Image (cartoon, rainbow, N blue to C red; front, side, top):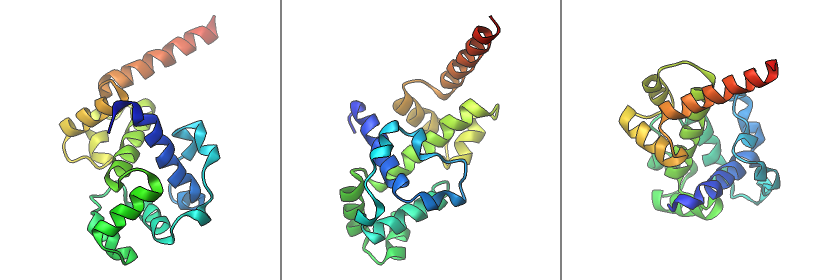
Length: 165
């Protein structure tokens, strides 16, 4: 995927997630607006194929697990290839890219909101190898997870200093 298409991917992922707000009852910490403000222009859910709605629901409840496309396809009564085609036509992104984006967004939130070790965060968002996580994170955000946390921390410290002055 071209580097400049990251924002487009965020919008697409958010559009899928925002279309079904009831999916987040179990995941109250997920805010579809955290992807981008453009999500306010999301297409209504009734325009989405019912099978894709079901896949999005399954992905949002199981994204941390090692979910396989073949398992998703079986749950909605489609072949793997057909599901991938339908999902891509609805979301403009593959299922694998959707899951990866969801994991990386969650990891970024955890990096900025906790002091948990980076390797623990990588495992908790579904990566099996911290080096793969580091590579994917750097590709997505342009900095390593350690630098991302440091930048967030220094920005937070600067904001606190500005408020006290």
